[in-house]
Length: 200
Image 1 (cartoon, one colour):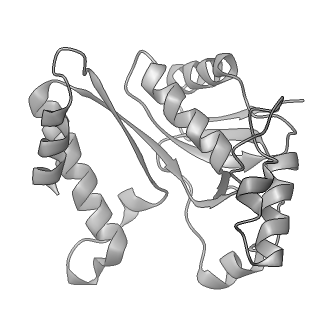
Image 2 (image 1 turned 180 degrees about the horizontal axis):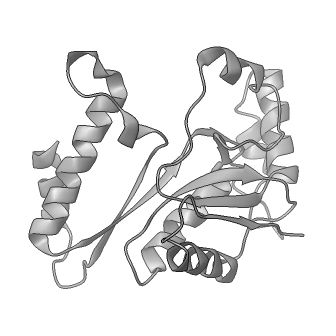
């Protein structure tokens, strides 16, 4: 809520703080308000409270959105991302472990879209893709999403974008992220803008 956000911002150094980056869920801006709005309505209210607070304090707000998260290995010696057994061994479900490892090996590309323009499908569709590491718009790799949060923090302008999965064996570099965000903001007059970054 607004009080929690205010407390959090108060704990940061006002001299150094110029931007807030929020990691949120896809589809929140389309949530219905009121009693039947569900959890997304609460998230929408929370986002609006943060927007208002940032505006009152003269802070930029960037929002990075993602749907279902997969992958996320922390890396190992000689490899900064994925394929870390210490993480994968904590996954007791064999299917989840296999999908997580495959996602960190083959689905590290970036499909980047301006705004909140990807809808989360119904539960049956989500269940159908649970055991797959194929790239789809409503899923994203944790490694790539984390890179997006860092890129949003480093980007000169406030921006809201959605991160989706794409096939690649390496995640986008910070330079690739900067180029992708620049292309999104330069094409903001003709939404939905979309940038694919395919690593090697």
